[in-house]
Amino acid sequence: MGQATEPKRVLLVEDDTLVAMLVEDMLDELGYAMHDNPATVAGALSAVEAGGFDLAILDVNLAGQPVFPVADALDAAGIPFVFASGYGAGGVPAAWSGYPVAAKPFRIDDLNAALATACRAQQPH
Image 1 (cartoon, rainbow, N blue to C red):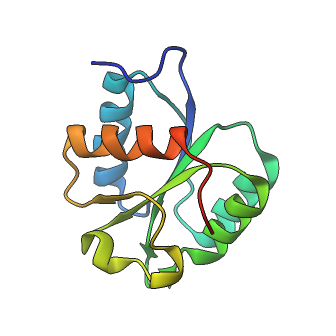
Image 2: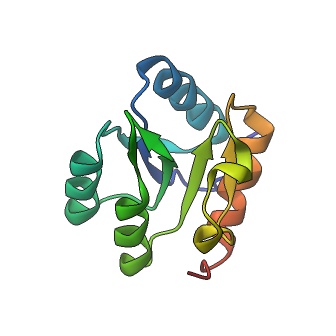
């Protein structure tokens, strides 16, 4: 079922350990490799600065803190990303509406489609 022809490294920014484990399993099944899983905005910003990954999945809400500073950093670096939200696209502000969103709870096909979309296009922000 793998999407990636060679493993793409994914930064997963997710504060729920069980969700992170589920996503890591899905990524593996889809042919992606998990790079890191920071659970805070500060940790994610450090990971973006350090680099070493090809794309990212960003949980919109990290323990009550919005992830949008990380989205800004990824956008500035030209690294594609997908938002993850329990509210689907409705959980993402209009300023970020051109970016792919994977709705929680994750379904592997939806995650695969969102990652493929992120990989194909330079995003519009």
